[in-house]
Amino acid sequence: MFRSVLVANRGEIACRIFRTARRMGLRTIAVYSEADANALHVREADEAVLIGPAPARESYLDQARVLTAAKATGAEAIHPGYGFLSENAEFAEAVMAAGLTWIGAPPASIRAMGLKDAAKSLMVEAGVPVTPGYMGKDQSPERLKAEADAIGYPVLIKAVAGGGGKGMRRVDEASAFLDALASCQREAASSFGDDRVLIEKYILSPRHIEVQVFGDAHGEVVHLFERDCSLQRRHQKVIEEAPAPGMDEATRQAVTAAAVRAARAVNYVGAGTIEFIADGTEGLRADRIWFMEMNTRLQVEHPVTEMITGQDLVEWQLRVAAGEPLPLKQDQLSIAGWAMEARLYAEDPANGFLPSIGRLDHFVLPDDIRVDTGVEAGGEVSQFYDPMIAKLIVHEETREAAAQALADACADIEVWPVRTNAGFLVRCLEHQRFAAGDVDTGLIGAEEAALTDARPSDAVIQDASDLLWRSRNVDPNDVWDAEYGAPGFRLNAARVTRQTFFVDGVRHQAPYENNHPVVRYGPQIDGGFVVFHGGDAYAVSRHAPRGAGGGGASDGSLRAPMPGKIVAAPARSGDAVTKGQPIVVLEAMKMEHALVAPFDGVVGEIGVSVGDQVAADAVLAVVASTS
Image (tube, rainbow, N blue to C red):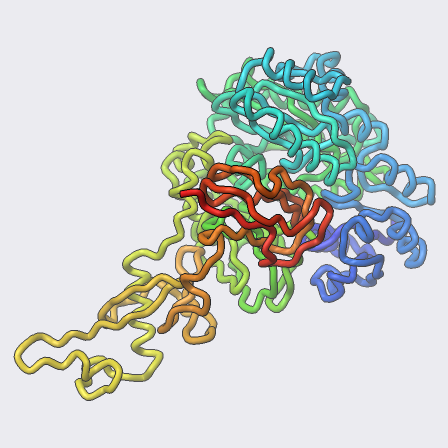
């Protein structure tokens, strides 16, 4: 076994790997960018090396800088984590050429499975069922559209070198295909340096089933059962669980056997995930599950597999990379209980899931469940990296108990002023379809309005009112109080003790009732305080926030929701546009965000060009109403 390991990653990922490495007695080495100088993973490592500026391409994705750091610190092995360089065959080869141990899949396996079109052809040869689609070399828009037309809509456009939902779009009709294709290609080129795509038939009622596989250098391959990752939003996983609800033993044996065949077909070594798509219209059936792709790395959702099997998959990775055989044989592995994981993101579901960046002034996560995170109170959520800030994982005897435990944990989250999706997660977990196991990848899209509705309940409004009364140390029953009592005094009528106040900028009125509160009192803010309920955070104040009722999109101005780069400008000054039509496209935090016309009108000045870096709240374009 090597004695030291450098983790070529950041945040939660690096912290997770360090935890196992320390337990095994290994020296841990971190790398970090200038933006991460005070990050948790830097302090948790035995040694840390600055490798470049904030942008990932100039630091975490710079192979030469990572290798220089490994040499300078005497690292004997490199673990790439998941994301960044974890599926980069050239980096794997460079690590081994430098005489270091590569803790990952063999470069040949990465190449074989890294391109989705070639991987599917290989799977057909191995007898693994694949979804129908087009995987050809002709990448002209005309050919791709013709193939999509022939397959029949809806179709799915997917980046050949993609992953993590990037470079992927569902297209429901022919007229929308070319715009979706252009967006996919831009996102794929930005994320993976490769704009090639493939076209797949979009499966109605699709479920995302994946199988954890593990191979060693001695020819052994095992599976560690399946996970269900069907609860997704725009191809980004939200909640994962293991085992998959509704999976009978015969279907489990069929899909896990197919996964093992897939791994053997590429002589796989290390941790990998075989992803399948299932047609869930008639439940899970072996003849309605098809191979999608293989991720030649550890997955973000690997903790749910660890929970139901009792195994540490990072330890398995380290031992296999050191040349040891797999710790267990297939017949020694079994499923115990039910596990679920929720991904906590710094984003605002009530505002189109826009990422939220800034300092975590108030940051409280549950302490009675497993939480994998790379941030802490006082830390920063940076514009430069993925907005996931933590994973919450529970393990219970039944699915029902796991869902309830995870919902309770998400409801206890307190974060401010950065916005999170905690309340959204609670609503997902408590949704009747999820509770019944009736989950497919379209559930969130179909129910998004209800799941993102974070408006405060009557109980929250009443609690906010009561807290405001008490925060002034006044007695609302005192008729002589200048602000609260006297205005409510009546000689021959009931007293009126109502106050006006604002919750997230919305005006409310409520009396003093002094009920048992449902909210938790949070930090003080200008003119008021924050309360937390059900995972959501609400700003309570006596006066309207500055800027309330101002312009924004209502006056036709399109402002950058966060710092980023302009990657497209579909409209030009003078163009007539309809409500919802894209005007400019901003890339930030590894995703594209289209800024659209707020109403029918004519495009006035466009103040940016493709390639421009813009600041948050910068006016990018203006649309003049024609009504």
